[in-house]
Image (tube, rainbow, N blue to C red; front, side):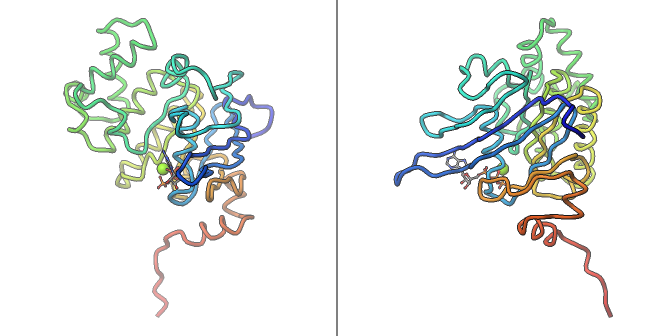
Length: 270
Ligand SMILES: Nc1ncnc2c1ncn2[C@@H]1O[C@H](COP(=O)(O)OP(=O)(O)OP(=O)(O)O)[C@@H](O)[C@H]1O
Ligand SMILES: [Mg+2]
């Protein structure tokens, strides 16, 4: 990785504040992050450190009356912070896709997966219903979801969290966005499905050149996929480094603590 690669997403001086009864509270402070084409940037930090707030700020999902997002979020050469909702809607999914931590909330409960998948494809392309349906089925099969035809007719609540996240990845594969933000895509999954999701994200990167912001508190997951890692603590980035360097020579006390508290298999010393 070097500076010659073009930057796809550039976040600089990001400050996020929430208005409360007793004044404003800072959720994020001075966040700087860059994503290059085809790069996977891991974002790690304990629960409540601000990882999901970072994702939602990038996607411009906050109500500006409640939460203030200051600073710059550039996609290619375009500033996203403050972009009108109508324009942002064209960018979400097509340019930047968010694989949500809680996938059920990304789907409308009263429509089948098929209806929502086809609708999403058609919003961003001029495919016919039939073409979009065929593309959706092929894409579901490509993320190893069994019986995709049947799955198209099912409702979101009939699928597990892991299956829904794979559906979101399948949608991303059709839209080929420049950036995918994957917020804890593996936390709710068993080891076999974790591996599958990571493989599919890797495919998205290699086949489509997609840049991925991979959020996890699992350093094992990060080490599988990330090129670079940013460590977050209490709304700030405390360390940023190449993945090998971070694991070999952690600089910040908090990073050292995170590495030391990784679960290990107890050895029998007797
Ligand atoms: N809409 C909101 N309004 C007010 N405070 C919020 C809002 N969303 C998040 N927060 C607060 O911001 C902080 C960071 O939350 P966030 O969801 O980003 O954590 P996280 O790092 O994603 O944690 P986890 O690993 O548990 O998902 C928390 O203290 C949370 O209570
Ligand atoms: Mg979160």
